[in-house]
Amino acid sequence: MKRSIIVHGGAGYIKDLPAHKKGVEHAVRAGWEALENGASAQNAVKTAILILEDDPAFDSGYGSYLDLKGDISVDASIMLSNGNSGACSNVSSLRHPIELAIKIMEETDHLLIVGAGADALARRWGMKPEDLRTEKEIIKHKKLLKIISGKAASDEKEYYTKLRPFRDLSDTVGCVAMDDTGAFAVGLSTGGMRGRLPGRIGDTPVLGSGFYAGPSGAVAATGHGEKIMRHVSSYEIYRGIEAEGLKASLQGFLARSDIRDLDIGFIGLDKDGEPVWGHNSAHMSWAYIRDGNYDIFK
Ligand code: GLY
Image 1: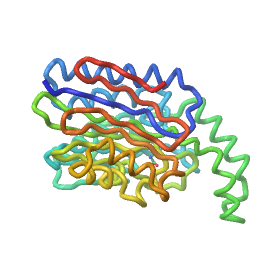
Image 2: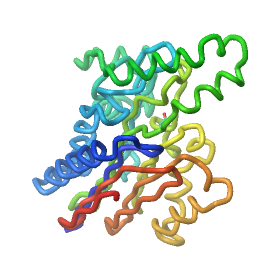
Image 3: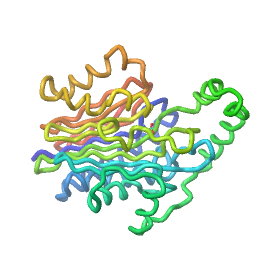
Image 4: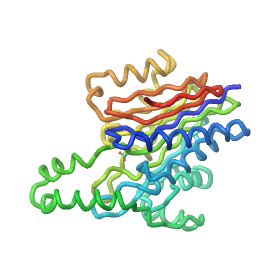
């Protein structure tokens, strides 16, 4: 028996740690139960992420962060150890973008579909937009607008400086699972960063940056997307597995002088199903179950 599963609920400064604890525990237990009932790694990842997308404690699905205009657009991705992958980005107000990413993987010849094209596919496959804005995020957005008002047009530098405190970055949900056949899957889902410019795309749908899966394991990222993408982070960590193992590769990556100050974090499984996690952000919420043994962030 090889099964193993790890989830994360985002990296950054997490204000409501109890809500994150409850949410990641619920998701990892549901994903584990699916594996125990014979689900593939892909379906276990989907099971866990659907739960996290429904939970307003997390920046994905219901409760997603709003962009500068006050709109919600979401990104998601999936990748399997056989190299199959699918992702969507800038999709309007979809509660479960992980389902769209999986359909893109299964039904199209493409890896990533964005914007109006992704919206059209979602409608075609019966996925309807919903109002996913929570009271909490509407209030945050109003405060953000007050603080930056006039700055975007007049002084771009000042606008970004003013925006920074709103980027608590406890963003993105992710899951990596291994099933009894030894196959891996990794999935991610996010509402992106608060106050981002409309059209901005982070790491979550970008293969190699936000996620990577192969025969030796799988890695999922969270945190500041631009920083994750600049270092092609998930593939960079995956690539070290053969030489030094996943744990050492992740620890070595996070300790690098150009990485150690970044608000980013990762989870992963190595080819024996051993869970690994690590972050340079203030917090990262995670939980895993392997061989029935459960652990969660402190
Ligand atoms: N890590 C998600 C994002 O930056 O959009």
